[in-house]
View 1: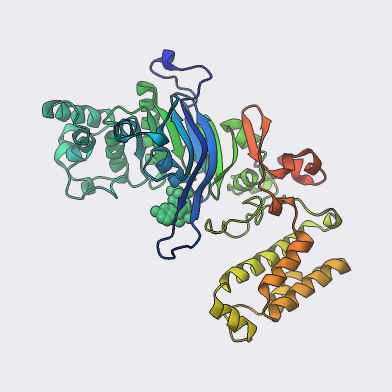
View 2 (view 1 turned 30 degrees about the vertical axis):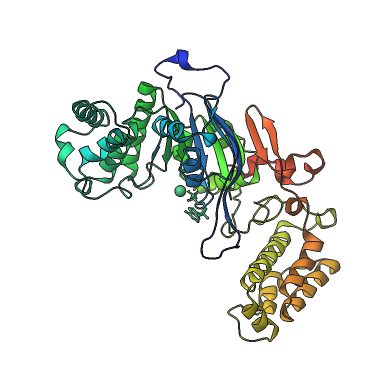
Length: 445
Ligand code: ADP
Ligand code: MG
């Protein structure tokens, strides 16, 4: 954490990353639909963590944070990529090597007791990893558990109690003691305080900070609460639909975010004083299905700074937003009518659950005026949907409105000291025009 040093600074290998994640991919195959598309939970993630550092991962629910943590620890079958720890690739370890890795690296969960047998006492829970790894003698294990309970702020008599007798904060202390039992070097903290009251959150975070200092631990902290991340992380990665959109030192990321998704996330933080607030970016809708991510940039379907075709640069934000929304509706409708039965119904004009597209059109565009060519494309698409050809409607809209954002996945661009961002806007030819560079306007002040 920012102001802490490791217990043994000599162990810091200057410049050498402690943990390197390179092109990591973890897909979940769907068992119900054999041959169906996999969920791309983690889809080509790369970053490094230095020894003693706290690296934060933020992003909306379902973007792949937990899967990333579990993949690094080899608790999930990884499809592609490398995870190196002090130079050793842990994705290719044999049985013994893996056992060692699972001692060196541990996970702390949001609900630490959810996966634990209700009938185990606190002492048994913390001792279990020691048993599994056949750690020293029975007497030493008992002693070790007492040490750990004491270290995380629990009392000796808690040894024989059951977790359900404890508060949320105490249960998290038990989870932390268990994770520390085998003296790991690296901890994945998966939303460790998300389920706790704010006052308890601070205590647990302080405990984690003290433990980090005392034992020279390296943390990867997963959180959706940005204030927690800002408070304790040295660097942060912002995740969206299985990809890291931006990585950088915490303060830079919060004060000079370069990626449209990071800006949207920060913009969504409630302001203490609304009068001083910046222009808000509204993140429309929810993230797309990771089984069927958008082509090109994964954020393109919701991006407020999406690159436009030059002939549409004169449309204002409101006009543009209505088009984006219309395209989203049609995309969703296309997905929903993917089954033969739905398609047949639509073609026959049988009652589907959808609002008639004409009404959607009027609702979105009724109060706006567009150039004639745009208007005619929108009407053409509307008529195609009415005729049951949603796919063709989508193609017509794509033809007119889609740009590089939907055609090509953006690369990770270096955008400052230790900061990188995945966005086509960083390419020379796409920087101007637009308000994109005016970060100030969108940031909380
Ligand atoms: P987060 O922790 O950011 O909320 P997760 O890593 O839990 O995200 O999930 C990422 C995506 O993978 C989600 O779409 C989720 O539904 C899916 N997923 C997670 N675990 C499994 C699993 N065991 N089988 C299939 N899909 C999964
Ligand atoms: Mg999660």
